[in-house]
Length: 277
Picture: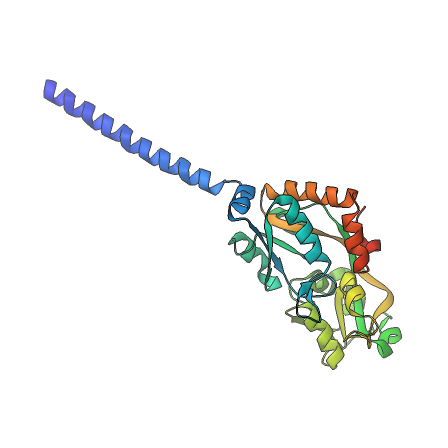
């Protein structure tokens, strides 16, 4: 009896030990899964910023140096966070995958705030107002301003962009319902298609139009169609879901707005009137 009782006791102790080990492993995994995103970024010393190239936000200047409103804005925020910015070009339609896989730490590239995106990512307070506009060859601007004028015409927009959403939205079938829509990889591609004549019109960010369709630029022969716009919106910076970096960045944005830094950057790129005050 004594031996049998001892055997049972040893078996119980072994079971308790095994359960404890599994519990410890589970807690460790849980801790790893819920670790501070801010601590992760500060430990590596960099904030990897996912971008695509388009003026006036992120583009290469005449010296092939990366510049633009978002570039200077990103550098100013990173200085307050105590980390170095690393700007990494991404495919726009893969942005959420790149973020969740930690290939980038944020999407900071004229990202339109939507309910769908807020459900899957943590997005900063809005910092810039925007809208979607229709562009075409300047000579066609008056004709294309009329609903239905794009029937049978080729219209392009960046894949997975707010421009694409506007074209496919039932709210704007009077403009795009009978058009032939084609998605392209980036807004610069959309403008190139219109310039080359392989597309008749494109839907792009108004902010992009400010920076790109100006006298002396490669797209000076294109024009924003006056009094035609779609989907008023605001830009934000997207981080991983529940990231604690978002609050720190919101704090930095407020400070840069209060001390006039953001106004100076916006003025440099012709965007003063677009800032969210």
